[in-house]
Length: 310
Image (cartoon, rainbow, N blue to C red; front, side, top):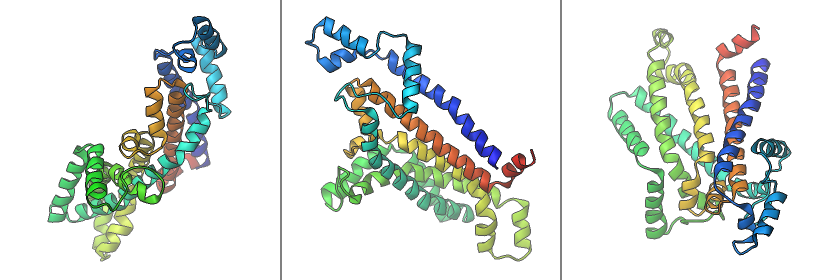
């Protein structure tokens, strides 16, 4: 088990370097002039050239990439061209709202999607199964921002029971969390239903039933733990995707998170902010997947046996 964890941790290093290279290269190809953004368009050409040289923009790409990697390893992601603040501080300030939103959405999706998926599988072709699968297809097909706008219209503007924007209290996270959770719930429901149907048709499930065990024990003690293995992986990927995919929802609900920071950075051509946010979110996604892989190996005895025998 220890070998597996070490191998996965070492695999993170080249992966992160490649991700940083791709993000840095794409941002470098974006037409931008930091001196004009900082000094304004009315500044003299000499002043702009001097500032660009001070910022190192005249150096080769690979040199700037190497410097960026070294600085990023020391939590130095540069300074914003827009306001001069350290990018690291900007991200740390915005990160709590984003992490609250993503955690609430994935927990909600798992609490609703997994039980409904189990119920649809156990009651296959029943009215519960038909309603569950139809609702899942509908939730997966409709864009999440549409759900967000409808939720604002009903609960904020008509009923006045929940706030429509901001992140001042936990009440402000209810509508955006539900909006983010809806498509993830649909995915959880469909995946849990599929894996449960495959599991309950296995021979060891028939053996458990033949031994006279109750249906409750067969489903929740024998079938569900094995059926949840791919669901755990899917939940981890969904959580990582939520961290980087909250741009739309944070914009709809006016939440000051990392997503809105990226959007502002793109609109203002603030390359250090956009690059820093992209690198941090990619790193978080990799760490989440590392945690999921370790949990998967802990649950699945076949992975533990493969590395313990070496």
